[in-house]
Length: 202
Image (cartoon, rainbow, N blue to C red; front, side):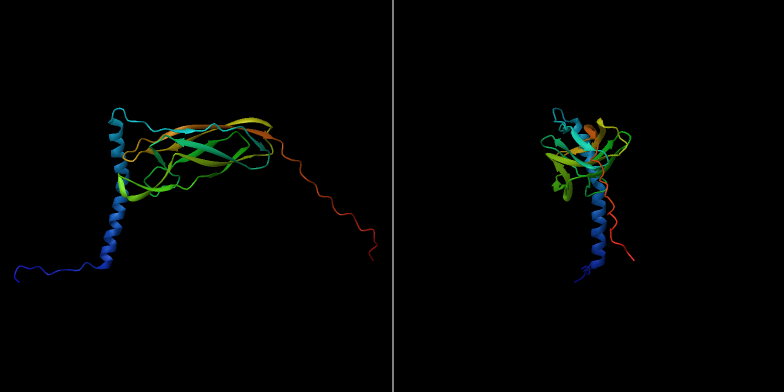
């Protein structure tokens, strides 16, 4: 028939390339969606403001020369979530803890929990890794042998960005502090050399 255009079949390779570019563009748009919703969220009167708080940490006794694990617990206000320490997008702000310790007290590995995979209206086709309700961060505290026994206050901050199901808020920094009591470690064990055999060796 006249005027009929011949049909074309898109090569599978071209389709895969298109899908790859589509996903890349979508991931790049996530920050724009977040900041746009963030601006809207701040203009709504009476809107609840998200908050993250830290549970009081009990005094922990740590021995000189020995690493000790300490768990710090954080609570997120109802209806909100924060990005996990390893978000699924490089454009998202991860939750990160930084601790400043006194001289001769070493902060070792920080252990973050895995995030929960969830989708939200501002990015319905993307699974984001988040924390909600509460989460804990493990901190390894290692006083060196040169530390004088006594109580020490450790200070730091938790950096996070909170969101609800439709909007995100500016990143915040939560002051963090907890106290440790450094005590002398157990005395080192000295192994005696085995006594010389009384037998005469010829």
